[in-house]
Image (cartoon, rainbow, N blue to C red; front, side, top):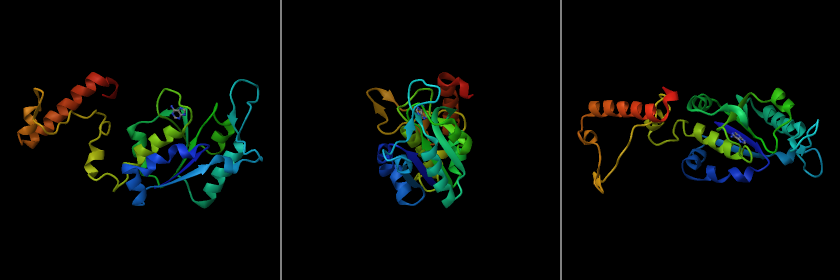
Length: 223
Ligand code: ADE
């Protein structure tokens, strides 16, 4: 998979892809992540990419021309499955969206800033608008990292134990059951006996029941 990320602050997104699992995915060539400094497509000598809103009002608007030039240049090089704009008014990211994106080949992420982008960019290029939650960040960069992480970890060969992505919370609309490791007793707190029983059918049933119980308690909306 190739992800092209367009932003005025690409440096904000470098370290997540240079660390741990995402780094391994990049090193293995399973995921290619390319950053594009939007100011390089500015059409004026001050490298300006935003301007005042027509009709007045507070805040600046990201101009159409630099974004169109950047995206058009990328599109001339390869086909993209989706051009995604990270914005608080997009659809809220969930596991299903991550799963769907994980089977695509080429994605563009556009990070918004200021008041947002000229509406015509959406009409011209954007195929999906994604929010990572009902709160406003300073820009789309951290949201782009969250989206990329949720997608890249699903690519074959990224997680050591391929099973583990399939048993994540949300994969079957249930939260995960509790998990334990050694020691068996800590400050009087015991590991549930069933997990020590060696009976895999009973353990599997217990985990399912716990997942349903926890989901009912914390996130009944998922059921
Ligand atoms: N940009 C600013 N806030 C955001 C959010 N919640 N999700 C995605 N992009 C954003």
